[in-house]
Length: 252
Image (cartoon, rainbow, N blue to C red; front, top):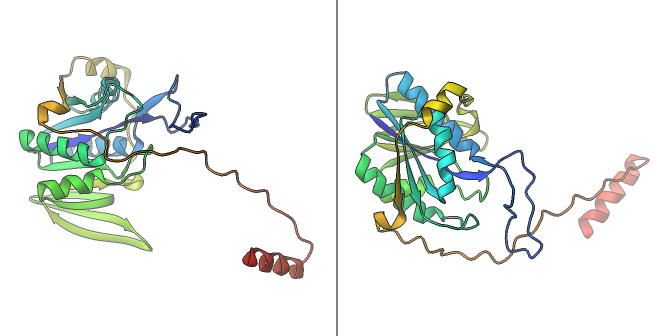
């Protein structure tokens, strides 16, 4: 069985994001970029499935700018077998929308015929949380989202997913699309020898046009602003004063 793992290049989660002065977007100049943390978890899970004998090949895919090859090399260094880079934009500020990504992934799935697609549940830059679900709908496949546990048994996948107030365990038929949550695993670090080996692993370069997909944005970002600064707290001398303050806050 092949496992397909889409990965995205995003601003590193340790970096403090700065909004441009004109509000047109986020400043990416001299900013460290890395693999989306949820995608790291999906890559790790795919590698574990291969190590357990459930998968024969792990294929990493990225849709975006040419610089995304660095992200794919990270996936290869972790243990993916080969990679596919789909160059869909020349501008690092242009975020390819989930529907366009899902359509490209569908075309790749049609070519590669994987038994499982493992996605991060969302990207930390836009928090769309939509690509996996859209791919499932386009393919007509079953889906399991927010997975915190995953077991493969024959043509079934047993998934424990996080829902409001607890955990839900479902069983879906393969092939399937699974989006992963933070508690599924702890991604491994790529060792130096594996980083060197990753440079020799195959990486195909394609374009969105090769798959007949129009990546023209359907959404327009009107304005980007910093989150509001949190207001300072106040101290009260008694319970009566606290209640009075709470009543004032309710009437504001």
